[in-house]
Image 1 (tube, one colour):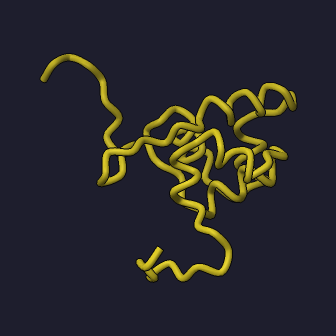
Image 2 (image 1 turned 135 degrees about the vertical axis):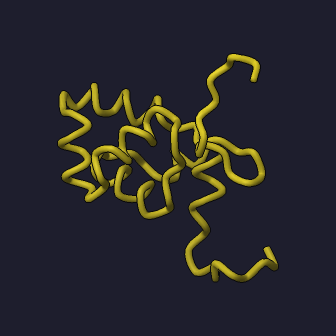
Length: 101
């Protein structure tokens, strides 16, 4: 072990990490709210939300949509900023199992 801390679950199988935690943290600060309040509003467990923000786990598409709605984050703008969000939020009308795109 090299002594460098690496989150256990923040990488997808392809090695991609969630890169949106700082945006979530900044929006929480800008709104003057707390992680706990956002967790309640989104229906995401507080512990899970904290782990998402700190890069210890990756959010699901549902988590991303709920966080975006709660913190008034434009999903299309977030997709432009975050490769992870762009990859996990599929275009509307696409079948998740359709690998033709």
